[in-house]
Length: 168
Image (cartoon, rainbow, N blue to C red):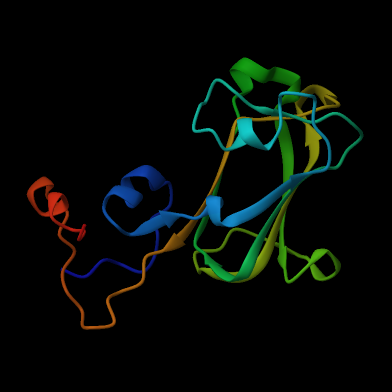
């Protein structure tokens, strides 16, 4: 059974990660923010807790910079914001830019193709209700899982197979 190369629109990234289609790679990057309130920085943005968040502290645009040590293939970028909890702090207009460094970033639109890049920049350009600072609760970066170089084998996703998929 071959896994399709395209990610279906609205696909749940956690489900795709469980089935071995994608892998979260945010921990391999260096993260920086244009500003943050004390105690509301990168650690809260990456802690897997939807109750915590990054809060900017300055003028717009608010920036999240994600820099990889080597050119990295990115399939999905997931941003979690919660209007019900954050109201005017919720981003309403976001720009995603990719490139080799700060000097050659290019804005991208929604694409189904993976992008190979050294850097991702997320810019919050506007908030709901003309809010000044912003809240983002989580950002996840996913790469496609490469097929085995030995040969093409079907993905084993049952619980029984998953128990024995790694060598200790």
